[in-house]
Image (tube, rainbow, N blue to C red; front, top):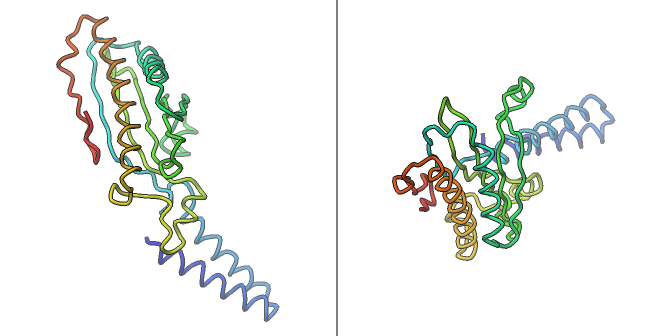
Length: 219
């Protein structure tokens, strides 16, 4: 599916709407409204073409014998981010599900969600930090995701309007600097929390693989 299909549905719906309005044909008018609504729904709904969430970069580690320490890692990460005094960073803990059905069935996990609110062009880029028990171990990870807001997705439908940079090449030099600094800072703060836990568990933090896997590749 592409923007062209969305515009086709909206355009066709608009024509039906006009014909129904001029000809006073209620059924045709309703069909037009349904086509318009369907086009926008396919593009603008969460997970739709224009609001599809993508994982752009990620990092993770499995800490042996770390069971029960998830809360400590998330709390320490939040504290370290605050202590870094990174500008305009918003943080909140959320219970998230990968979809509506699985959410209803209770398949949820706790994430620390980190957002850079200083640069509106980066609002669609969020970092999700998670720590969860995995057997006797602790699975710790973060994900840099991209999903535009409703208004950003709507504006992206307008030709030649690029308020929602989707790839690194869409970002100008300043945007790239801000995104890299924001993500690297969160990464380092999580690393500090992981290192702190590993020291408490009498493990060697020097063995941590520090480099992320994705389009930033930070370490």
